[in-house]
Length: 261
Length: 275
Image 1 (cartoon, one colour):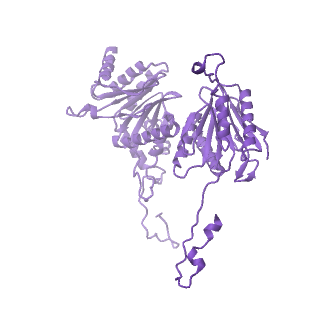
Image 2 (image 1 turned 60 degrees about the horizontal axis):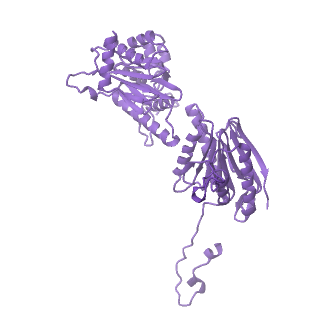
């Protein structure tokens, strides 16, 4: 790319005797402000918890920048460790943008508490994150964000976003490099897509299996399975699996090893 | 610039700066702020009573002419679905504050998909009320004087029904000779307090005394309605009828509701029946 750009225009290189020296050719420079740092994230909710997970690999093309760059963050905590936070955010895509977005949302959630004397609800935070993203509609934060917490009834709440702020509350969502590998797995295992009740009928009369909230242990296992599988087939995913589980008792964070190849 | 003396003790050639609205007097007073509270003293009476069921706001309309269309006197306005406001003092000033509060409410709903809390709304209004004498980008003062209006802000949120008063407490306290002038000077407008029941405006002294006697925590909304009307009736110069007073309520179920002609007639008729 660079060598092509640096080449002077043809006429000048050859330098015919009859050619008049022309003005210096316009040199093109380009700057691409985004990088894809790979990695994948995943969120699943249950009746009284929400899980947000992501691998910790950071890549640039075929290079690994670091094996330990977490993608899941506590938002609105009381100190640097995020103690006291009741909202989680995962960001995947361009890591610098993801970090900037995380810092900004964290500030907003803290300011909200000072201004209104109450903690921000996940629903309110979800809407605020959407407006933050849309405010940069023409120079977006290049990330897929997932927000997790507990709603007013104590049920797990998960909101997924596109880079410009469209969002939706869902039961589960995979984002990032291996999202196309993980999402169909979740559709089948969490929402029971393409699963039918045996013997309930023939052909179209076959009754679909109804989705219902899964127990925490099942979900934890699904998350680990999803990532061990993704690591097998995607080079940008690996190293460690960071898992955060939010319940009424607070946030629990654990790391599991993933393949480092 | 500042009054300064040269090295040799001669007076500085630059004349002293004229006292602006935000300049303290040598005694430590802000005259414009004090005068603005005098303006409120001239305002019509407005009363608010908070109960566990909701809040009632009531104002006297001062229909000064038989040719005046009473419905055009608008002293209770909506800020958001869950917040209403009664005013006493310069109506035009109140418009500014109310407009600001409406924008804040809408802005909050846009950003957070939830209604703005009543206290936060009140705080937003008070923030604006304290911005007189401030300079904008073009170095011209945005507002040259403090607002000459007091507001009763009634609303309902997750903390239940609430009533707030903007910038009045110390004016009232001074009238009653309860505190030294200096204490009152220290608080310019832009402060707010939460009340169970509060009267503002020209008849506020008498009205507040009445509220003090009559208010109790187990008041129903209907009883609060009667209390507001009864108190207004006592302090109004004109004879109270359904045209020269205006009521409004804020409840959990219906949010802010301003009484229509029929409801006003009904409320006033009920007052007559009770006495």
